[in-house]
Length: 539
Image (tube, rainbow, N blue to C red; front, side, top):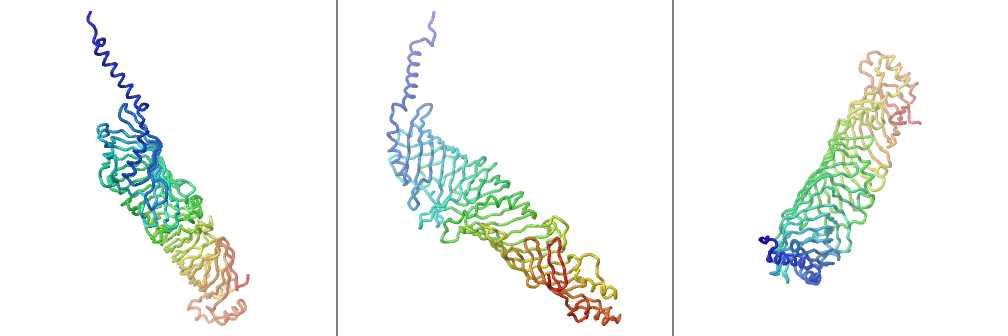
């Protein structure tokens, strides 16, 4: 009976050799003291990158491929920056080319980086700690194949070389990325970085906000030391989508962005802002641009008020955020202007200019008072405002400017009283039964102590003209004094009754000449919902 092939002597010997080879390969990590080469590897890397390097442990595997694992790899900051790590990686897994390794050349066919933390420092001159130049060493660096990065965290901070102070600005965590092959023999391998980062599940935290920005989707591409990407994210109840671009990473150029927000609730966002968070920021000696872009808000809610179609060009400098210009629509009109926020001061001072055109006052007042408006008209205004966002914005609000309310009405002036009845009886004037209408109501305004003051407001109304001065409060209270005149039509002179009316008017309104059109003092107090008109300046 012939012997089967798998029972032959040579098959048995070959199988035994293969088994011994597999056992030997599996035993290599235990028999070869690879961790003894760790100091040599550290020395080689330090010579190459001219930075301090630390590696806690090194392990070698040869099955199924030559596989090197380094644990807790740290690369320190370059000269001119504080002591610390630029990069910390919990685990670096390298698949090595064995033939190149035998030739003392480090050829990495693939690499996986797990638990990456990158600390990006930017000094007041714009220089960062990311710059890398390779030099000679005992081991030649070859190429790096595909690189996978999992669970990366990027911390961005400002550094003041004069004081040594490091100020955290933001942290991006939960990022996964992949990089294409890199030739390490090039003079500056960082120029070859071609990476794609996935933002889904990532988050941004900053000292300025009580809640993180959480990404629902997004992809960032890095190529030729430039960055571009898209994202969809949420901050509290606010949702946003947009694009971002950075023209250069070394030196770090300004970030350009375009963000769209369906709805912004100002009160909700105010609760997320940490007051005074910018008080310890290091300020660059020169004013430099950090970021610039457009923000579009479909709807803005500042309860009970709201606006639509808001759009602003935002510029972030080393000490200030500017919105110039901005525009929005509200209650049939438009509001345009500029605004700035100095975020390096604990009080977070805000300065804004505002130009209002064609705002429907009746609609705005109805929204404020939750009822029928007692004041109507089309409002134009030009104002300059200032407040402190880090404290009590309403209490700190100040400003000055002018306003003009046209073609409107307010509740009937009861100050006329008996005088109106007399004038009506002799057909000198026609007094409407409803509200008093006017063609113009305008003047100056000054805002302070939660009130809006005016030195001179002029009124051109139907059958009435006058000027007032006084104020109204943010609590909707009114406190005005003024003088007015009842106008008589020219036809009244032909009736021959002016002298009789004059005598009657002197009795009704002491101190007047009795001639039609003479001034009468009055006051307006109460509230927007319930204004109180009275003759004279008394209370």
